Image (cartoon, rainbow, N blue to C red; front, side, top):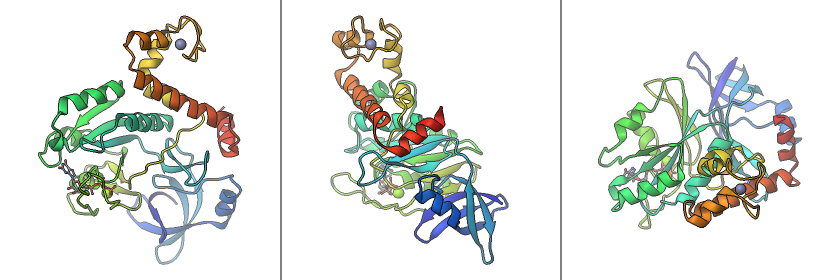
Amino acid sequence: VQGRVISDHKGGTRVLVPDGREYLSIVSGKLRRAHKLGQADKPVVGDYVQIEPQPEGRAVIQGIVPRRTVIRRKVAGTENATQVALANVDVVFVTMALNEDFNVRRLERYLAVVWDGGATPVVLLTKADLCAALDDHVAQVHAVAKKERVLVTSHTSGAGLSELDQALEAGKTYALLGSSGVGKSTLVNRWLGAAAQAVTEVRDDGKGRHTTTHRELFALPNGALVVDTPGMRELALSDVEGGVVDAFSDIETLAHDCRFSDCSHETEPDCAVLAARTSGTLAPDRYAAFKKLRDEVRARAAGADPQSRAARKRRR
Ligand SMILES: Nc1nc2c(ncn2[C@@H]2O[C@H](COP(=O)(O)OP(=O)(O)OP(=O)(O)O)[C@@H](O)[C@H]2O)c(=O)[nH]1
Ligand SMILES: [Mg+2]
Ligand SMILES: [Zn+2]
């Protein structure tokens, strides 16, 4: 039987099958051994898996269907190791609140990570009601989100919510990513029409309280699927530059006019990117952010991380 992983925590992995039944599942010994040897991944939320049903609503996961898209995170306490956190998400709402949470450099990184994993990012700005300089903030976001859709919302005033609701298409899988307290679960509850997810007020400094503690996929009444997540701070890029290229489409466009097609935009003559930086058309922060992320990807590609080298081979 094929099903989809809808949640994954200490109690077990819940797998939903097309007839609507749920199985509390464990990973087969074979798959677990392969994972230990670095030959297989663990199932994550969003994965399609083959299960073998057992009595009393239990099942054993035998295999994972190849993933269409992934969101990677850094493995805590390691330099280079990454692990897949979410699979088969079509659209990621990169969610950022228009309060103390606002940070375009972090947004830039999230956009690169989402493109990198093959999903489409949409910028979802929340808490517009708390922002005294809305136009300025939205302009800053557009300067970074060159080709991504940007939605400006307030759950409190209702602004932008109907446009957001209309963005959800039946049969597609969405995920909300962003810091704790930006209002991800508030939106999931709105879409479900029920208080399915706990929501807590943020602290005085605007930071959230890490209310949501595990990733979970919900089926919405309109047929769309959405994953609510806890704030994941350490998202990770793979070892190919694709995500960075997509997230920095302005720099990519400039690079067409560099003299050398493999220009690194650092010291080369007739570099259109450096020229734009000098003339001020390209903001220094934007250039620095690009370089930082690209260098991170290159370091990983050149690095000693065997998992990543294997991944690169697979992609060829
Ligand atoms: N002022 C204002 N508050 C909001 C808005 N949306 C959500 N909130 C509040 O922000 C707080 C945090 O919302 P949550 O939905 O729990 O945030 P979250 O992103 O799920 O947080 P974690 O689960 O900790 O990752 C709650 O008190 C919400 O009522 C908004 O548009 N404006
Ligand atoms: Mg939450
Ligand atoms: Zn160049």
